[in-house]
Picture 1: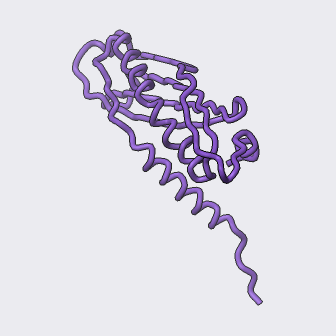
Picture 2: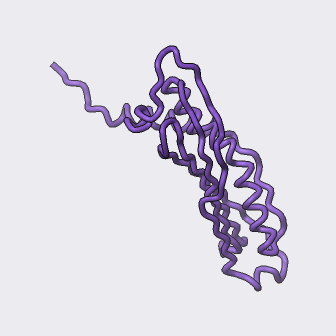
Picture 3: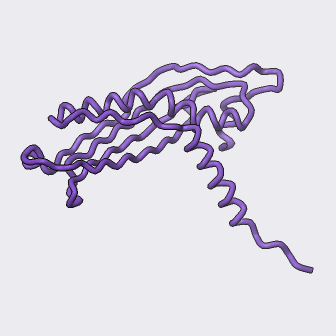
Length: 167
């Protein structure tokens, strides 16, 4: 958690946790089909790669923008890209009165979980408008992703610690 995050959510010990969604919007969207119209001819077996990323920033007192980036790359068997679709689905969330762990989990797991269905629908709409079969992305367990990320951070912190001094 950054110092700026902590200052923006000033929470005393008696404060009650509060969370509310203020706004959901698309920040950026992209669709590319470099192999069209050839991609529409013949049969092919799609290989789908999904890439997820999220980040946040402070936008006001107790207000945070969370951006979930979803990139789907579909390739043919030979590795050629058939289409690439990317959506940056964003939301503004009011968060206050949480301890550090609850705050981190809200920004790193809960907010992306709220945004994902909107991003999934946007991706599906782009793919259909590109004249490809619908692409319904499976649900994502952001709690597991967040927990894995925390474990990796803890491991990196432990491995970057200086070796103990030997007397």
